[in-house]
Amino acid sequence: MNIQPGIVILWIFFGVLPIVGFLLGLRAPAMRRQVPLVLAFLAGIIPILSIYIPKVFLADPDIGMSPRLDKYLIIVAGFALPLGIVNVIQNSSRRAARREKGWPYSVVLLFGLFVTGALGIYGAVTGEGIGFRQDGTSTPFKWIEDNAFRPLQATIFALLAVFMASAAFRAFRARNTEATILLIAGVLVMMGRVPLLEFLTAPFPGLQPAAAQGSRTLGLLTEWIMNVPNSAAQAGIIIGAALGAAAMAIRVILGIERSYLGLEKGE
Image 1 (cartoon, helix red, strand yellow):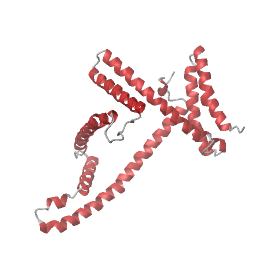
Image 2 (spheres, rainbow, N blue to C red):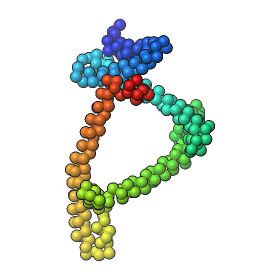
Image 3 (tube, rainbow, N blue to C red):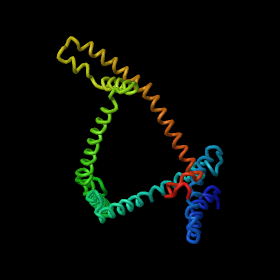
Image 4 (cartoon, rainbow, N blue to C red):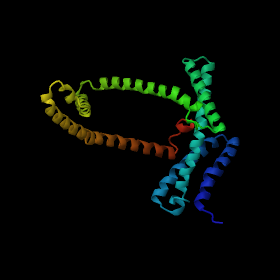
């Protein structure tokens, strides 16, 4: 029997250790906090070690600890969905029972959750699925999706467009140098994305060649704005976000950040 040390270590870390921690936590409440912190440290440090120590038991795609740990995350994600459903049911039912502000929305949310969930289970039990039947007609789940979910989704995106237009109007006001640069760049990009000059000169055929040449020039200027200043700004934002994520990951690995356990800094 070929025993892989990496797999054995993972089973000890993430199979035996949580059980031991749970049993110890029954007698010593402090262990309920310490064991999750140890597990978070191990889950964070193993992928880092696999990069700098490319040994078989750490980085091998088939038997390495880090790739196998990535596969374990799929199981964790599977548990996250039922956990989210239970959380929605608890919070919404509590809000509806106490008649808190906006409780009718919670009732509608629960109604939609149970109805769509029941129709999905019905499709799985009967073998119809959640798409179309063999004769081309929609299953009940698909009917709900086409006649309720998609119209609501389109409504939300339409409202989002209104909010974006309102935010752009406030941001594009030339109140200082930076806002003026943003205003000019935004106007040039919008003019370069649409055939505005051809539309304005449509009643004057003699101006059409000049309008076409102006549109091409605006298009080239728009591409330069998008590829050079815009790309540079995006790269800066991405680098900043990556540094922030790395800093947060280090805080979690070292046990400094404990809010994901519902603990304060001093606990």
